[in-house]
Image 1 (spheres, helix red, strand yellow):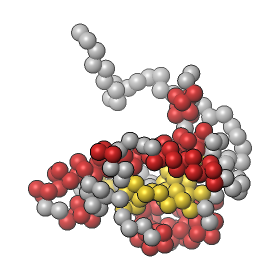
Image 2 (cartoon, rainbow, N blue to C red; image 1 turned 90 degrees about the vertical axis):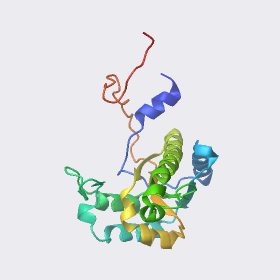
Image 3 (cartoon, rainbow, N blue to C red; image 1 turned 60 degrees about the vertical axis):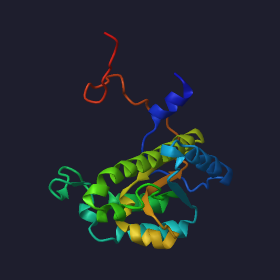
Image 4 (spheres, rainbow, N blue to C red; image 1 turned 180 degrees about the vertical axis):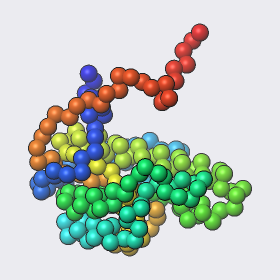
Length: 218
């Protein structure tokens, strides 16, 4: 199997079992360069990365996450009902523990080059909102590509990690502490695994027709 494809198919979220071994700055720089190389609409590069290597600062941010209000019900909401999506459970406490125990956390900021911010969308007129949501979607796609690039690069360097969006429950506290001016997207937490195990390739043998359509010549 192609090495790049193999790495992608073996990527998975790791929330525990990190060693306290520091990640060399050259490795982190390599990972960040891969994030910066991600594609983005109009080459807008709608991201800024805040690389936290200080365990005391990670401890402080973890405390802000686990002490935020509403942690028991912090899950995605259904816009048609305004209620939490049924069947989902909060992982805020688990995410705070990950943040506390991993050596590096890369907090990802969406600079809002098209949308200006989530708040701007909330206050936009209905006429302006339709086009602005498209711009916001393109921002998020670019940011997501950057996160995936960094994650795959980290795996290539022998690291494990997880991306945590639910740290947004403490967004304002994190923004203040890290001097983040725009929207926080989440944190990519990385570390060396204490035990190196061969991860199984994801089972993608069955390509569901609900997820993939093949439009072949007739």
